[in-house]
Image (cartoon, rainbow, N blue to C red; front, top):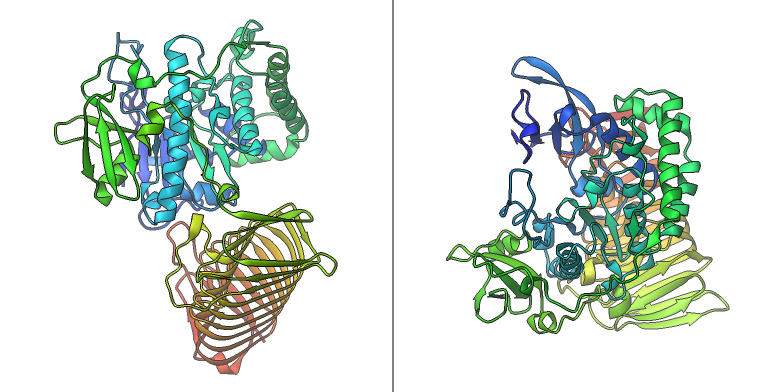
Length: 639
């Protein structure tokens, strides 16, 4: 699907125009949704340089590169930029979650003159992936909560902006219990954009965010900075002014960015730029880095404005009487939307359909009388009292046990710990009693989880799909045993690195093991009686010495989403499929024995954003007529 892109005339008055493209069948670099910019509309060399640098500095940044496009029979050079979507987040090894952006619905509706100067700033934040947000009750809870919190920050920012008290400062500290990691990310991004003279990307309607709800981190997403730090020649154009004033001391953030830039390999950076179609000399890279570092040093010495405090006002009572705007409050329990005039004098209520709920969180809902509804909060009373909310993180909802370098979060489960022998025993008290382990490291522990083995549907509390969820940064676990798990996954490893010596799972309501965005070495795995897949590996690198899977409802071992798996010794019994390799994954079976399986091997592409898969295995006479290889995928049999 192709359509014209851009609000400004520079995108479409010349041929070829900027284009928005969505691929329905296949992908480009593992994404399916992107923009083709006219190079002269985006400061193309600068965009490639700064977006690549943002990625090196740890920010979520879309893939951006030059590409030749045949448009109406002629070949043109375009700048291609990936959209901020699920595929971008997963490429940074994180699970899909709320994607938010500044809403432009009421940005362009009050122009004073042709230079796009606006009377009043009043647009808040919108959810950009409403399908994910409304997929489950848990997703909706997470999405409404982060949307409400960012809307509070935006209201405070816009009051200050309308009073000419600030230009780009956002007081994210207003969010109760915001994590230190969030503040660091958001404030470092603020400093980074200043250092590249990219303040355009800090404008409220240009900002984009991703909320990593599993780790309680709000990530800024690099977008639309309009920087010319690479190509401007006059010092006045690329150097910050010393008279610039900051609203908060960001000296530590500037110093950390300086340290990170110093660690970048100029050769590697130059090679990546060249792969993206931007070939510049090593000297040019060093010169541009020096410009940025000089700006960071200037930021470290800027004056601080200390009088920008929390505004004890409500934004929409300060903007004037706009009859075409109502503010909305949504109760997710009753599904009732209450929408009111800007002064809360006149309100109406209605039950929202799922379709209109999507429109509400996208900030695209209008009433029957053609009045735009702007979602601001879940609670009208708290809005009236100007109460700033906090993020509903698992740490605030669950009980906690502290152990060594990790914490165990739970709601009703019975937890027994033996510190001397490093044994953790968990006994579920309800059918979906989840436990979450978060922290720096799990070392030399044995973990036992005993569930209730109910057939009741699992409710995915706060988006966790496992009965036992392990999110520690590094692990060296001696033993994990899970029995009678009633969750989508008996055990779910997420974004962790390390080793598991012995893993045993018996009687799972759905999947046995699910590992996502991880690099793990397993010595021994035994899984018996999982109603779906016994073992599922995604988005990572995994090695398994011995794995024994029996009575798997679907697949014995499933490998997907660009994973690499090496299995030294596999035994698969009584399963629909022994091993599946799919979606750009590679599996290497050193030895494999199959018993009572319908298909030993299945290799295919399922998801649009991935490509064909491959699998290597030794010759096996039992499997001679039990192999499925989709066209384009590769099976290598070693004799």
